[in-house]
Image 1 (cartoon, rainbow, N blue to C red):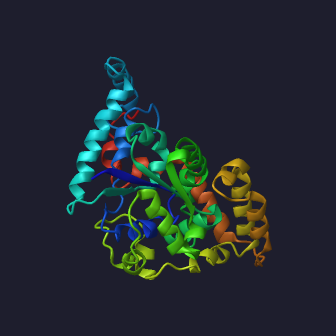
Image 2: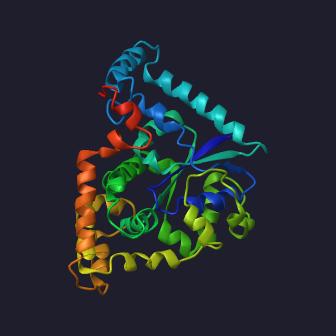
Image 3: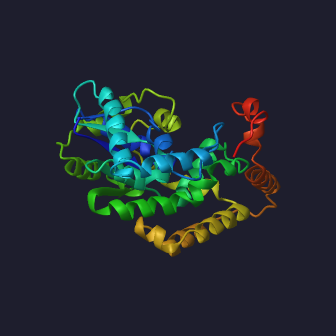
Length: 322
């Protein structure tokens, strides 16, 4: 293996599609979503981890440990590179040139990955946030708004983190918008192959649907529904925000995103808002949506998942969590 490829995107941005297209090349290996780098990068973050062992104290100890290394944090990231590369290589059973790590929540640790892998390849996949939110609501919420608390960080912190990460890696990465890709997949797959320094293979687009990611993570819905690169998802959002209440809801969300963040990803905030407001909507009291959002906001504030979650309630009730 020459190096890993990191595919950075937000959830529900088409990353599973692009992953499977790239997997169809004989020089690229990949599996589902590794999530490998997250715990090891968060070991050196003061916030963002809730543990039995008291992460706040762990961070202090870890900081002292790092400070006494000959090359400080550089030694840690070098060791982390060797560790991760060893595991990535074990997936390259046919001596592939690259291992592709497609983990959407890596938007949280792009700077750390950039420090760890100085020679890696980086692909940024952006998607119109209206379309991404629509996909989250339809795929993960069954069309309802009662689970929006689950996507709060993805939707509100994610776009900024992705853009900030792209600023860091812009000179040594490849960036594409999902909307561009599905409209001309051959052109952009050829561009990606050129960036990766591998030959384009027509079979990548012909055979991507047969690629097995060998895991439970990723877009299992899209895998079953689409056997070809399709533009149908580009208009699905209109059915999600087809009431006056939901139109106002998505307007507020887009208003909350800084214009420069969207511009860096290739989107025009004013155009997005104009497009939202151009769709025909039904006027209704949206009682179910209102109740769903109240519920979601309460869950976001109270966080009962920690105390009553299927995997956390047993140990959370008996332990002090810092």
